[in-house]
Length: 417
Image (cartoon, rainbow, N blue to C red):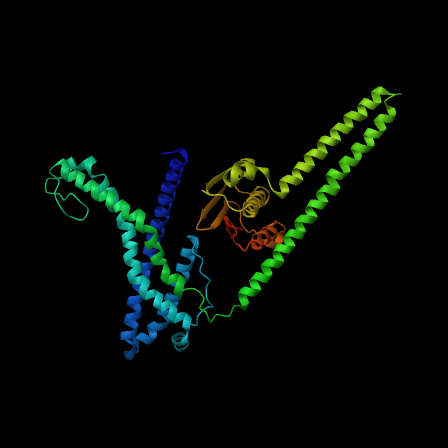
């Protein structure tokens, strides 16, 4: 096997393991909403059966609220896993209007599927890893089990010889193969009803989405114009003035060189100092356009550098296995930099944390501090600029900062830019 083939096999194995781990997490996460879906489904059945007696009519508003809340929770859960579902318009809560509403009917269809098939798939996602670990490690501890204990996780055979232990090991390998091979497909199958039934239907008015994209484009243009003005101001007020000063000092030193060498040497020293300051300011402007640390160390390394320079103790947890688009990484860097600057200047926090995770084509950032809270976008803290940067990439920002803290800033960006 050549080196290239070895690297390819290793990369394939790593991708397979990551996909299986993500699929297991999604299946087990869906198990929680699947149990709730089964409960709401049973409550719906009770309401339907008791409707002629009038009890079901009293239960109907409760069923509708639980249905809509559970559907919203499922959209949010899948969004955290990288499955974006465009939500429909808020459905009605009155019984007569809800029965005629297509969104409610679609949510009821999802409820039936997720409370049955989704529940079964979630249980498989939970049990398969447990069975794989149990049977795969059985040869290590089979001598410790009683003689009448079953060998395998499915209750077949008894542990008497090493041959029985090896048979359990082979079964564990089979569970692992099923999990690696079928896990991602099972996760997609569990999420399929939500993708199809919880998203906005074909009859949904798309004017809101058009308006949102128009606003996003305007925010991108504003952010671009603001950035150009900042760069122009930095060059004009800083580096340009320094370079003019260097030119003047060099001219004066050239004229004084013959009659006053000592004075010319002093002017040259001042010119050198001004040139060094101009170079430093040019580097600062260049870092403001695209920080070189992103290209050198990647987003995880860049965020660690920001945390090290933060005025309060800051912990970084970065799980970004693949590089995102340069614009996305730059936006993420500036979002965290601005957020940590706010933490150091305004929050009075004792510690902060930064979390960055890339999953399913989305980059999610979370900056949290234990400060006094009460952060306000209108308070001149730079949050408006952060929101515009995020909106320029069609991302989302959520700020939670109650009085007394903690303050949590969450940003969701598309990895592709």
